Image 1: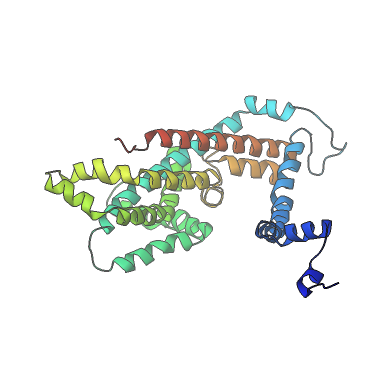
Image 2: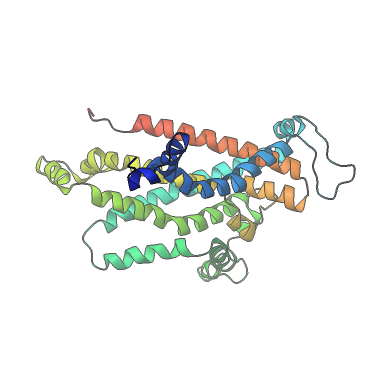
Length: 314
């Protein structure tokens, strides 16, 4: 009986089908991503499930009596906790203020840099510097030094001009504006770079044709440039909003959440509850409730952005 060398090496029966499945392209791809999948499940999914389970208990650090199941008591507490309502409002104000300023400044500067100017490459590289710096370092430089009420240059200039000095640490509105200005200084370059890339991707023939037809610069921007930037703008706004919702570093360094809790954000509130106060269960509840709200915001924003997108017919 003649058996070829290839057939002798070929697995037979069930072994053949198993070998083919394991060596197929799809199986190989799954095999390669299996370690990363296991790591992701271990480092993210399990903590999420565990922290969700904690919200139904009375777990506290260094508490006597042990941990017991208390049902929805922590979730019910959210509806009557005025501190939670305050920090939620503070977070929304911070996100709306910072992201709005960053987008408007970013759009204006991107339009300016889109013109044919010298040293454009230098400006692009310079824009990366604020984003590469540590938020804590930026908070200290701007919040603790630039806006210092005792030896800061801003109050010194106001004093020399005979104007009243800023006492922002005692005023909730001024404290929030300081936080927003710090965040805007660091993250406006993000919008500039993203929108500048979008502007340079727009075919120049569209603008030239509109100008030939007698359209003004404002009409070109409103009818052509801005609608074409809307998908990119929506993506950038969503990314920055999600990051701004998580703010904790600049708030903790500059104001500590004060005066009172006038600038305390949801993330800092959960941190103080769990780490400083030891109320792990309620801190997990606050974090989960905030995460659900951010998810709802993201879905609503995407739905609104999708409806606002220009169609081919328009």
